[in-house]
Length: 267
Image (cartoon, rainbow, N blue to C red; front, side, top):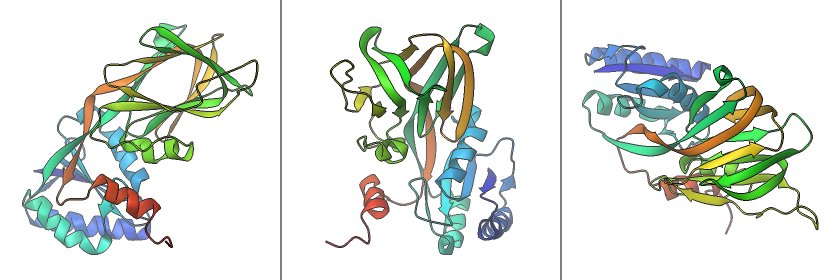
């Protein structure tokens, strides 16, 4: 079995990566950065996001597993002291693969060669280089609203605990095939009006954002910041591809939510 290790590159992460590589190679596994079967991410959720985008064209065969060397993450759920146990489980293939939904982002520009498609594990956001973003929101080809505000965020269920939550969006269990559109500081008064709440859209729905005028937009896809020029529309739907995680033990989603946001609080 082939493997690769993505490290955050701090001292502890690099040390653990070297230890894990040595153990795995001792068990007869092969280091293969080009075509790994398992990608071990050592660092945090950001490290795993980088690994995901590195292998976005091999999602049907690559399984990810994360070791956190900082705060507990939603994707990196193993502790540094457990590295030997994890390596042994990988070598013995004592894991099952679970799949989470992804977001497909299609950016359509005036010049067809400038159009592009992306996959997001967490979310995609749209902001205007101008002070206010003005976008017509279409759901399944029907006009829903004209949004005015700082920006819009479309998140996956697994990404609903990230930027989406900070914006006041709902937390969605990643077993649900859905995406969520959340507003950033919308303008609501006697003249302008938006729904003002997050929209949770099922997998058979499509959301298209169309600017009132063709212009440049800053679009993020997870950690990637992309400036696209002369954008005509931005389309979102639940991707047919899924991300695969190697799960070695039960780690319920709501337990992760509790550990990340509630653990340590006083009742």
